[in-house]
Length: 242
Ligand code: SF4
Image 1 (cartoon, rainbow, N blue to C red):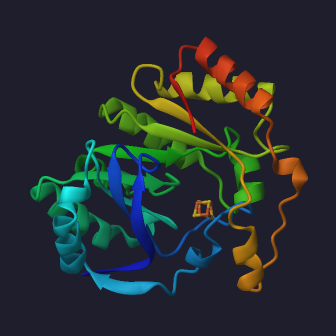
Image 2 (image 1 turned 120 degrees about the vertical axis):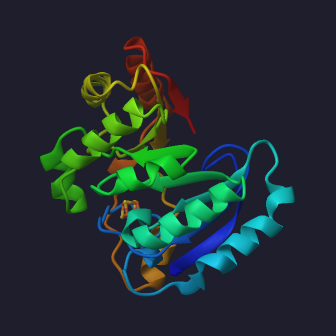
């Protein structure tokens, strides 16, 4: 069994708790115009690596997993390589390594991964499925079901909102997100993380011959982030700000 990986490296506390070995898996079923990893979107490409090689690398890295770290699988979109991801997570769990995934939450098969994941990061880009579809390419109704499922399984999902000006980053948007998250039970189990738009991917688009369509309007002021945080908190939700 193999996985296609387009990037790997360590980071501290950005993609799950502690110091982590992070693998970016090739391929995504969305086309978010702000994506900072355009090189990972196509389903073909990346470097094929066997699950056993990845496991061996994780085992060699155990001394680096300080402060409750471990391995994070992100993308691209991890569920596009579901069988390989399942196999790797199973191996990591058996080896006692802390596991995390980040997903756009649109796979009906995400539930198969939940028992193998210690820390679940799940993106929620919009509360309105049609608005989500018009900007990213697919509606996100199934995401809501997956968040609810993760809550009922006590996975305490970290729901991440990439804040994009003109799309999902107003006080009214915060109210709508809060109403959705209360319906999904996130107040009882889980957190909300606000990730203001950044331009990290801009130069990659040019290098890949792709067009970067984001404008200044996408930027979100610290005041707006503070206001959205306050609104979400006023509904009893736990908010993490990056
Ligand atoms: S879901 Fe993530 S990886 Fe996929 S296009 Fe959107 S930002 Fe990029």
